[in-house]
Image 1: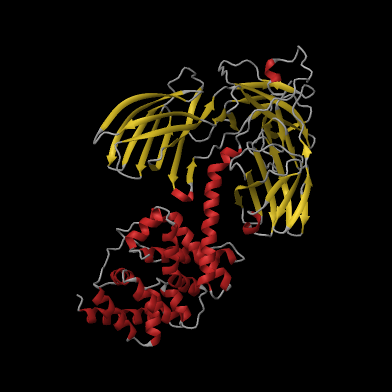
Image 2: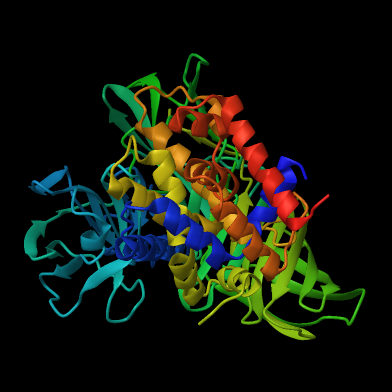
Length: 448
Length: 181
C-alpha cells in the first residue's frame, strides 16, 4: 500500500473516529465552538444578503419616469430630441429620471461613520459610507424622511470592499419594495444614534445647458434618443452622455459596445434563502471623440465615479475643444416581465414548438425543448427575429416555480438554456423578463 | 437531525440551512485543528476562528465543485481549510511574494476510494493509538489532516527523512495489522 492509498483509506475513516483522534491531538488547545458557530452563521447571513443584493440591485435602478413641470421655456427652436432630455438629472457620475437629492460633499458624522455619497431619486436610494461599526450595525440602519415620518427606508442589500467601505441600497420597509420618493431632509438612525442630514437638490438638465442631440444616423432606432451635455472639469473638456427612452420601463445599462459577444447567465432558486442570479458583466469598449484638429480623445470614466451607470466622461481635450463623439452602441434593459407561456417537455428526444416572444425592443422565438433527464431539459431560442436589425438581444431572465436552476448562453442569434427542475415534470410555465438589448445606433454627436 | 455524508452534501447543495448548521457542528474541531496548526504561530485566536468560519462559507458556496464519487467530504473540507489558511498567512506577510511550495498541497481528490469496514476502521485506530506519542501525532497530522512533510519536519524539529521513516513505519504496522498486501 503506497502513501496515496494510505491517505485515501485513512481519509475515508468515519468522522467520529477522526474526531476522537483530533481531540487527543488538540490536547490543551482551546476551540471556542460557540464563537466559530456564530461567525460562520454571520458569514452565511452576510453572503445571503449579498446574493439578494445582486438580485435586487437592478430593481433599485428601476426609476419611474417623472416629467418636470411644463413651465420650462420651450422655445420653438428647441428640438423634440433635446426636450426629451429635460427630465434627466445628473447626480454624481450618472443621470436619473426626474427629481433627485444628493450629498454635495463627503459628510463625517462621527469618529466611526462618514457618508461618502448619498443619492435619492424616484425608486432609488443609494449610500456609500466608510465606517468602523461593522456590517451588523450598519445593516440595521434606517432612514426616515423628515416630511414623511411614517415612511422608513431600510436595508435592501449591501456590499463591502473590505476596507470599511460599504455600499448600501435601501428599500421601503412597509411596502417591502423600491417605492421610494425623493426627499431633502432625513434622519439617519444607526445603532443608538440619530443624525439629521440635509441634502442638496440636483439640478435637472434644461435649455440653458449645452445639450446636443445626435445627428441623424443610418442605424435609426426609434425607441431611444441620444445626446450629450458639454461640461468642463478641471480645465478639460468633459461630456455627459444622455439616453432618453420612449418607454419608461427601458433603462440605460451602459454606453458603448459590449466587450463580450457571448453572454452567460445563471439562476438558482435557493428557496427560503432567496434567488441568486449572475451574468456576464456588461463591460463596454472605450468610446472616442475627435476634436477639430482630428485628434482622437478617449472618453475616460472619472476616478471619483460613484454611481452607475456612468454617464459623465472626462477627456484630455482642452476645455473649449469642439468634440465630435462617436457612440457605436449602448446597452439597455427593459425592467418588466414580457411574456409567460407553457412548455411541454417530451418524454425523450427533442420537440419543436416555435413560440414567438415579443421582448418589446426585439423579438425571439422559443424554438424547441429537448429532454435531458427526468429533471432536466434544454431549451433553444432563435434571437433577433424582429424587424429592427439595429437592436440585438443581449440576454433575458427566466423564471418558473418549477425551475431549480438554469444556465443560459446567448450568442449571436441563438440562446441555449439548460434547465434543472425541482422534480420530475412534463410541463412548466416560463416567465420571460428583464430583456437586455444592444442598441447599435452608431450615433454621432457633434459638439461643435 | 443526523445526516449521512450524502444527505449532508445534498442538503448543502439545496441550500438547506440545517445542513449548514450540521456541517459546522460536525467538522469545526477537525477544521480548527488544521487551521490552528497552520496559523497559530502567526495569527490570533480570532483570526483562526474567522478562517474556520470562512471555510464553512466556502464549502457552502463551492459545493458544486465537490464530487462525492471521488472524494470524502471531510477531506474536501480540509483541502479548503489548507487553501484558506494559506491565504490568511499570505495576507499577513509584509511581502507579497508567495512561496510556491505553500501551494504544493496533497489535494488530489481523484484517488480511488479506499473504504474500510467499521470493524477494520476501529482496528486501524487501535493500531495508531499504539504508536509512540510523537509518531502518532505525526501520523495523524499527515494522514488525517494532510499536513506537509516539510512542515511536520520543521514543527517536530526532525529531518524530512526522519518524518518519512516514521510514516513508513506506521503504514507498515497498519498494513500488517490489517493483513493488507
